[in-house]
Image (cartoon, rainbow, N blue to C red):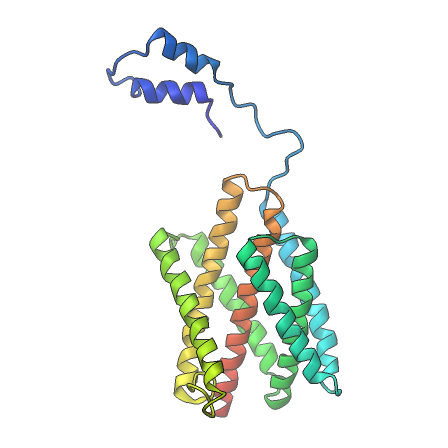
Length: 264
């Protein structure tokens, strides 16, 4: 509970009663002139765990609905356009919200629709080649997410500034390698080999899964700190967006890993 500024300031000035000099009459008057805490401002709404869960659930439902439609369209001539629209639309909108730190119901749900379109198409392609792989990837994603939530709640992983810097740096590094690998495809078959199957591809996907799982911990901490610090309710959409991005990445990496393992 927030402390009355008068009491807090008096405690700091008096040193908690450990024999420090008594404040002067002018200092005391200044302390008493500070308005006391009166509670939240009228009409202001704060982010809660329920609001984050509800918004994340809404995004995942939209993602699932769009993915279902996209899955059906893969068998038509619209497969490639659907895949490209979902991938490019999701990337563009995701980068915008990430760099501006702004998300609302419209942008978040449209992003979920783009991502669902992309995931539905790519999942159908994988499942056509490796029957049952999508169910395995979804189950793996859920298990990793629940497991990371558990270890976070029991305090097995502490989110410190150093931990945050390491994970953010690792995430940037992983995506940087993905971009370099994509560019390398233009000059050499298989690029750097990070997505070409085999031992290197398996190792890279495992590393990405670990990094994505650690990003979930950062997302959980962001939600908890936002609630504790009284973040505005609007921030719940950005928190839901962050969780959805991480879950999508985690799912794709697990899907790739299972595909590599099916080939071996």
